[in-house]
Length: 111
Image (cartoon, rainbow, N blue to C red; front, side, top):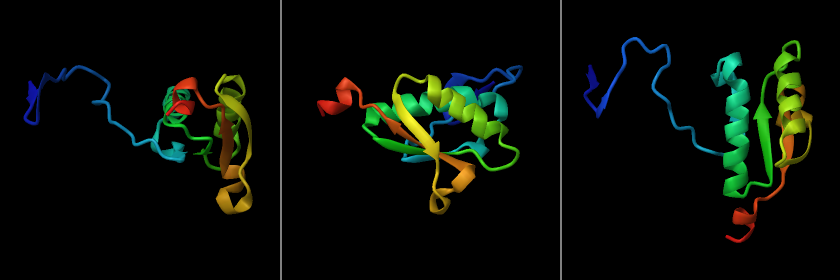
């Protein structure tokens, strides 16, 4: 079976949808992803944001009971490219978002 817009074969048995490319901006809304995807999404987003030279990013995880907030902040705490992070101020999402300051990569500093 093939996709008419793509010559690559599609595996109808695969439980995974085709990957989509997400534009890297100064914030990411994690509501768009399954909870099981959050770790990989945050990791990939941080790497791409650092590569693009972003100094500050906002991760929107929602308020709820704080489960995703805690998970996101644990990931940020362990990531070598993150200098520090805080809950967003009220006008930028409050408890529903986290602001992270990134270390610039050598590549982005020389651009």
